[in-house]
Image (cartoon, rainbow over all chains, first blue to last red; front, side, top):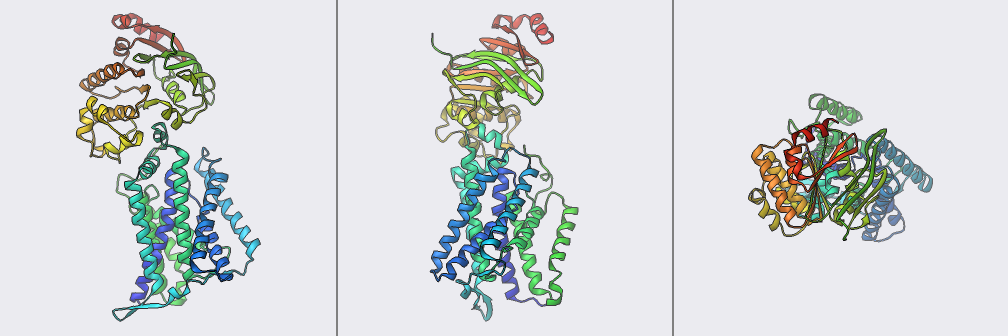
Length: 298
Length: 228
């Protein structure tokens, strides 16, 4: 096992990216009690938007703008067409519906762009290293960590300091009572969906730097890992879900870099074994305080 | 004659196969307290939830100042001028007292603080850290800051110490004097009948009889109303 600074920086970068996905999933879960399995396909759509712009030689900022536009529009469409009509259904129905959406979007990508994949490499220069104190660290690791930290701080401020943030927190605790106090359900859910889309678009931009080949299953494996991380951390709270996402990203990045190549193919097995072990010991999640897990919040 | 603030007209509420409310009619005018009493499962909470739009109305009508509220969302009913103090208080324990109030309205909480000084005293604290009595005061204050025309209360005295029950009933009297129409669902039959302008007794979703304040001392009538 070899551990160097680059491995640790990569692990932080991946952890930050997964934390953003965990927040994106957790925000929607908070207000809708819906685990959005199709979250990875939002990232995929953003990545295709970046590839679309790259193929045509459009400037980087146009590509990023297109990516954000496509993902946010798709998020809102998903809410209007799928989540809203099913809002009163059981969580199981909604979860299965998001599976369907995931496969639908993947199939659309396959039909439109083919299975070979497209290249989104307009930010590939971020794979070059910065030399810090004699140590080479890839720029993207630092950028990912920084962007994730900035997004999380912005989100904490939004949730903690603004009116809509207060309403979102209340809705996540007890939506029925919040509505009877005058909190508008559609506004709160719409805000959560748009924020979650903005985060997915951010992840798409960061992820294409490391994985410039965009295929229909882009971000699928990451979504499964993040979902495991969210459950691992504790789904019921945004903070614990985020920490869970970060933890599994960090572990994934760290082990992936530290393990010899012939063993790293077993990486997902190691990770999921660890997830199962944690859940056996702490079913409520790793980052929840004791006595607070498994609290029914009707 | 002016229209009463809140009119419930031949209200029907069903929960699946259960017929929770069957043909309930009542009216509450500004400055009035109307009581709704009856055993558990009589349909009292269902009535309040139907007024708020939180459960569907299966038949009949609910009107605020003559305009029907049937089919409107709970948030729209709240904005129209009806506030509910829910059963079990439903305080947001992880939010501060002040944040609980801000959920209902952005603005001046002075009137609510005047009525409940304890709520002002602990406004920076987490609501979950308050005692049961303080939480109930917060729940009423939270309903009042929205400046409703009609206040619905679902068993506000449940689980409270006698001294706090006095405080709550005293507050209701003062809220009535501000010209708010109050519909009070309670288990404490005698106190409710004594305080209210009229009290409807509900059993199995049906209105049984209506009592005036003079019936408060008449224990026989109260007992037979419950047992009928």
